[in-house]
Amino acid sequence: MRYLSTMANYNTWANLRIFELCASLNDYEYRLDRKSFFGSIHGTLNHILLVDILWMTRLKHEEPRSIESLNQILYEDFDELRIERARQDQKLTEFILNIDSSELSRTLKFSRMDGSHCEGVMEDFIATLFNHQTHHRGQIHAMLTQSGIPNSDMPDLDVIDYLADSSLISR
Image 1 (cartoon, rainbow, N blue to C red):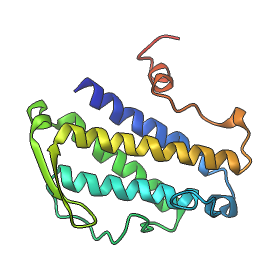
Image 2: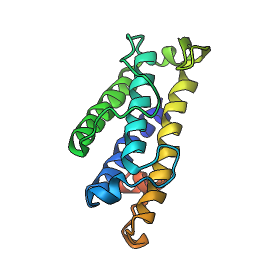
Image 3: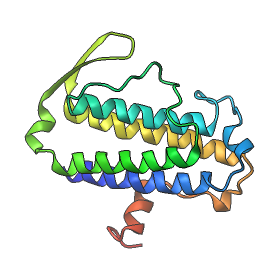
């Protein structure tokens, strides 16, 4: 459980850092198609949020939101996207902090976007959610570098940096 709560808090911390840096970009740089899997920084941030919403509905056995594709833009406006990102991070953290540890080993069954069925251990799917975010934040980090932000201004996003910033380890 400690690992999952650390990851939930790290996730919020990393997202805040990414959004702070994205807020410094002009709209052209932010929306420029950088030939990444989801095109732009905006497209990638939307994708991360969309997949988090999808995973949370699965984990909580809720009716899924109307999601048509994995590259669907949920929020065109950066500020709205940023607000919803913070809301989703809060929901995820509350979910992790309130889940009973016995729930983590239960079997979760759901249908994927392509209609195929999936079944596995809940804890593994939660780890997938966190890993998915880390993967795409790495892509955004690279796109931010492409936008001309100097390396010296790029935030460190490693878990160890979160732990140090949170005084959970000493430097």
